[in-house]
Every structure is written in structure tokens, then in C-alpha cells.
Image 1 (cartoon, rainbow, N blue to C red):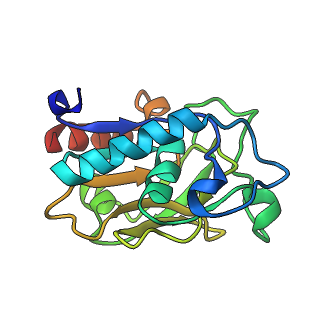
Image 2 (cartoon, rainbow, N blue to C red):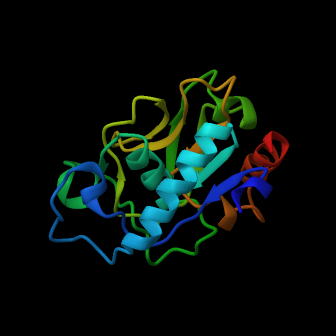
Length: 186
């Protein structure tokens, strides 16, 4: 079935099962769907083996990181000191709610031409220790990792973002550019 895929987009959704990265469930862990986690881990492994481009959004960056050997923060607000409010339940999904700093020369920087982006925020989990084959390329003011890419970017196109660019495409051209870059990589 995957052989017909030119690219893999990992979308947002439920929490990641912490057993995937060797942790016990946090008291604030939300709903998990182990079958989805398992399926997406298999998809990530297939895409890696075949060098199929991966664009991971919100939950997607978290499952990507866990599948490749990283760990995640299960509840940012209770596990990270002086953190921003990363779950903006009262905001419109298309509204930017905080600024992130983008690493110069990274895929995200090359796509948008920017070293800062305003993004929306609807998550309570996040990347903690980055998987060995990934590298962090954007962070929020509180240090929460907001984007990752492959360490071997020339051979495998991987971009993971913690926000929801799909909800911002009507008002932010940079978010459209992310999808254009993904489609171009496919």
C-alpha cells in the first residue's frame, strides 16, 4: 500500500503513548490510541527506508521523534518551568499565538527566508530529547522545540513542526510555502 506514496504527512491528534519512549504515563496524559501509534511508527520506518519525504505536524512531530529514538514531554505546563501557554484553546486555529526562533540555514529558514515565525499553538506535549537522526531547528522563547529536520537532509527530506500550519494558510504565506516545499520534495 505504501508503495504508491510519494510523501507522508503525519497529522495532529491524540497524545503519544509514553511507552514508545520508555516513560510511565504522566497524570495529565490525554487519550492515546496505541493502534495509531503502531501504524504511524511502521509508516515512518517504511518512509525512512525508502527515502520518502515526511512532513510531520503537531502530534506528527512527536510520533516522528519517538519512532526514531527520541523522547517527548508529556505535559509541557507541568514538566517545564516558566513555559509559554502552548495550548491556546480560546484562540482561533488560524491565529498566531507566539513567536519561534528559526535556525539560520535550516530547511525552515530556507523555505520561508525567515529567522522568526509567528505560529499557532494547540499542544500540551512536545519533543524533549531529539532523536539521533533529527536536529532541532526552531524553538519557542521558553526553549520548547518547535521544529526538527533530518540530520541527513540532502538524502532524506524530513520536516516536523509543532504548530498547525494547515490552519494558517489563508492568512500567512509562509505556511503555504511549507506545503509547497513538501509537495516539491514529493
